[in-house]
Length: 137
Image (cartoon, rainbow, N blue to C red):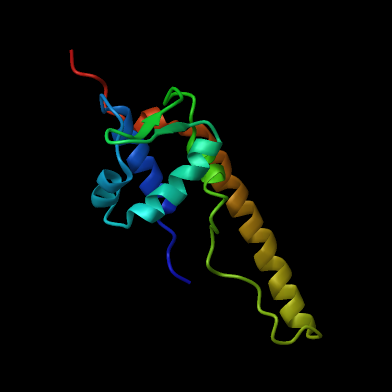
């Protein structure tokens, strides 16, 4: 399974959008994130639906932050991206009748659920503002 960079990319994009005077186009974000503008629009759409960004059309259109960076958590962004898969490892189902396979799968599922819960709790503690340098005086 390939790594999913959407969360890191959107946090990066949001931090940069915050510091801009005007809207930031999907094309500008795509260059910054080394990806395709269509993918940027798709990812930003979830953030727009959640109320974290607004989009404007036209020549000077693009994306602007619609919420205070201190009110947006990493968990909020993760959820707006439809909760990307956290772990690439999973249970083995080659032998569903095997007691050992069942025991192993159960233990792995419990451990991964606990780890995912801890990670999501941490995501809820980190604000977008943590990635934005303080304004110069």
